[in-house]
Length: 259
Image 1 (tube, helix red, strand yellow):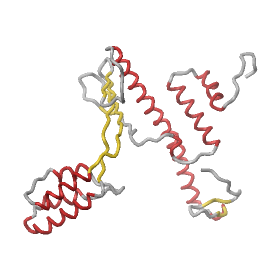
Image 2 (spheres, one colour; image 1 turned 90 degrees about the vertical axis):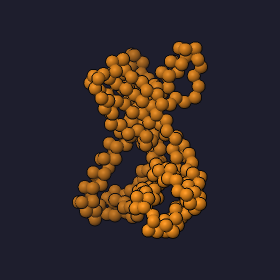
Image 3 (tube, helix red, strand yellow; image 1 turned 45 degrees about the vertical axis):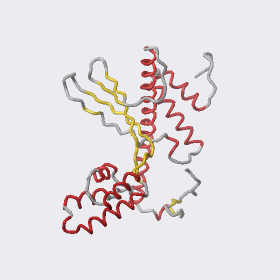
Image 4 (tube, one colour; image 1 turned 30 degrees about the vertical axis):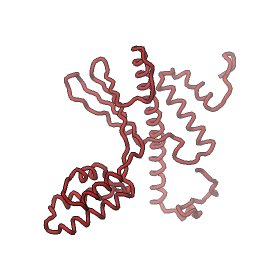
């Protein structure tokens, strides 16, 4: 969010106004680099988001047309769809996956399993200890690996406390939503192996989701979005000027008006 900062001052992370001459050259240099990268990154994120939206729409519309061609009525969202070009060299897949997270019951499971390990002491296998450690190791965001927890849950041991721990793991794992993944693959010939086009779309957000924007920011976003959409649809360069004018809310010129 932009704000008025007096001329000759910089604002630091605490909100303090610092005289420009007191900002070191290293800090100025870093600030310039960060803002330059952010500018390109914000534009790229918006472009990727629009690409994903168009991709999802195109896949959905194609599936609807396909379903209607068989006399059936389309219903619901499409998922786990694979589309391949006629020459067999381009493939687009849409996958829908459930997102699973571990609830607070996992604390009981961890306590019970650690008690089991302590009670078994020397009889506990080194591999089992390592598996338990991996299962309850959090990532940088404080999340547990669902795959590791499921691996732990598959281990059958004839012990009442262990079985209660397994039950707690099962109760802890619950759906937390769904994620859509688009993957694009290419190859030179139909006999070659597929190579995935390096795109990461799962975490892309709409341009307006990052925070508040000034009217100027919103106008710039509308213009960039309109131009990107026009180019995506193959609009001629000469017609893009009017699209920009429309995005800015400018009245359309008559054919006889001077440019």
